[in-house]
Length: 195
Image 1: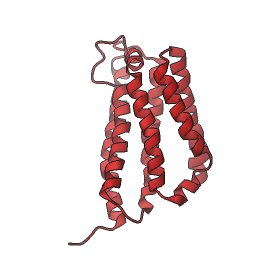
Image 2 (image 1 turned 180 degrees about the vertical axis):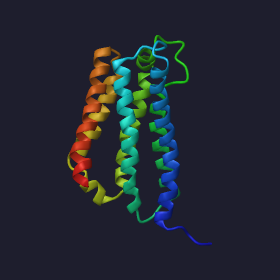
Image 3 (image 1 turned 60 degrees about the vertical axis):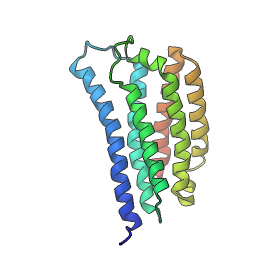
Image 4 (image 1 turned 120 degrees about the vertical axis):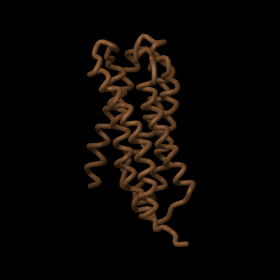
C-alpha cells in the first residue's frame, strides 16, 4: 500500500476543514440574507452585527492562515483531529450568532447577551487553539508573526473574560468593536507584510 505525501494529505485535510468552515460561512450569510428577505421580522442590532462581521472575518482568516499547513513535512491523525476540532469551534461561534430559533428571546441581541458565556467560552478556546495551530506550523511560521501575536492571545482572552462577566450593552459593544478593530489591524500589520 502506497503512503500519501504530505501535500496530498494537506489537500485532504483542507477539504474537510473547508466543509466545516463553509458551513459556518453559509450560516452567517443565510442569517444576513434573512434580514434582507424579511426586514420586519427581526430588529438589526449593532452589537449582533459587530460580532457577525468579526466572526465572518475570523472564518475567512482561518481559511487563509491554514494554507500555512501546506509546508508541513509530516501529518498525523492527531493533527487532523485537532484542526477539525478548531474548525468546529469556529462553526459553533457562527451557530450562536444565528441560532435555529430565537422565539424565546426579544431578538438576536437578547439571545447573544443571555448566551454570551457560551460564546466567549468558545472564543477563548479558539484563542488557545490558535496558539497550538501556530506551533504546529513550525518555528519559521511562529517567527514570521511578530511580537503582536504575543499581545493578541492575552488581549483576546482578557476580552473574553470581561465580556463573559459583564452583560451591559455598552461593554458588549466595546468588546466587539475592540475585537473587530484588532482583527483589521492584524490583517494590515501581519497578513500584508508576510506576502
